[in-house]
Image (cartoon, rainbow, N blue to C red; front, side, top):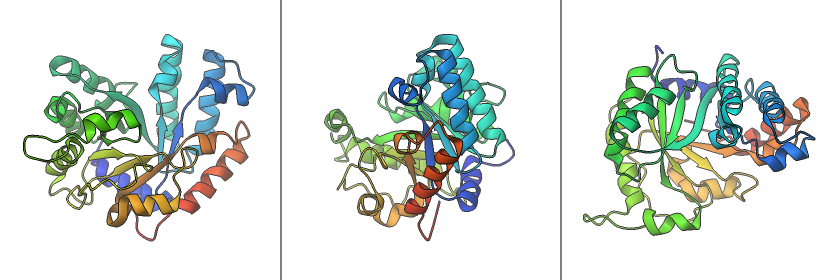
Length: 278
């Protein structure tokens, strides 16, 4: 990598617009496409999605668990999705949500963030709930390899509130402390830092201070989960130019027809596009 992830993301969004399209090979979607829930059906589904979307959107987000469910053959398909998606011009965000400590975190960083690894896309999602500092090996690997990370900060599942809304000894919510830690790493980066956060597009009023983040915000929940343009504006306000809305099922339900998938992605992008972008 010759350019930092923040610069590459800024360029991709400027050229293609602020949309992250998920590739979630859920067994129900495979069935809707008339495909079998096995490695062959997975491959047909995933590579059709890449064919349809990788030339259209700024970011593709394959959900690693749906590939891992098929064992080594499924992981091999994920490797092809990463390689072919990037070759078609999309940035690939591997949605793996890894999180651990020490040498184990370093191994995850080597797998998902290090040049030469077949599982390394352009960025990866990580969980900071062993402490943001536990992600240091991944932060270093991202910086050294021109890649990015997106750290779970405020997710939309109700179970998360017990942890994410709890307060530290300094009075901040856990979610705010994660945003602040990301902002510290991103300080001074231009045009954008490489450390993003994940904030659900359906979380409603949250009280997070995002003005110092200087990094991208991944906003899952657009479309099938209920968020639309109005929710994006109400949730993110002045931070909206940093937001990458994510839509998966709402686009993928239009498959397996490639033209229909592209049309759905273009319509979604038209809906989410704002005058300013990441």
